[in-house]
Amino acid sequence: MNEERLINFKEVAQMLGEISIRSIRRVIAKGELPQPIRVLSVPTLPLSEVQAYIERKKNERGGNKQ
Image (cartoon, rainbow, N blue to C red; front, side):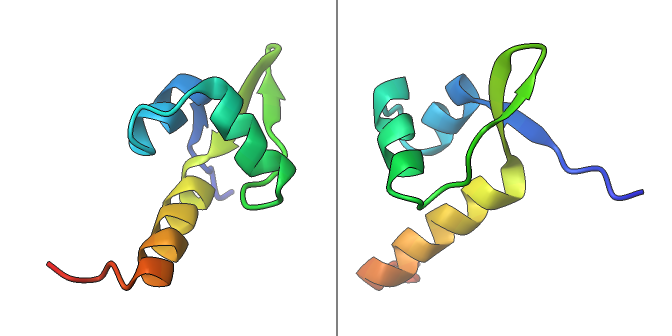
């Protein structure tokens, strides 16, 4: 069984540069992140999906520069 780590919106916000929960919901509404998975009524997202979103945004900006 492959267990995916789920992270709550607070963790997502930190990964995306301290954005607001409302901004996370906008990104989801635009289809750039998947619909949240509710765990005990807490909305969560798969960590891998958030990481993939960050990589896509970096690539859009040519952000692979180190």
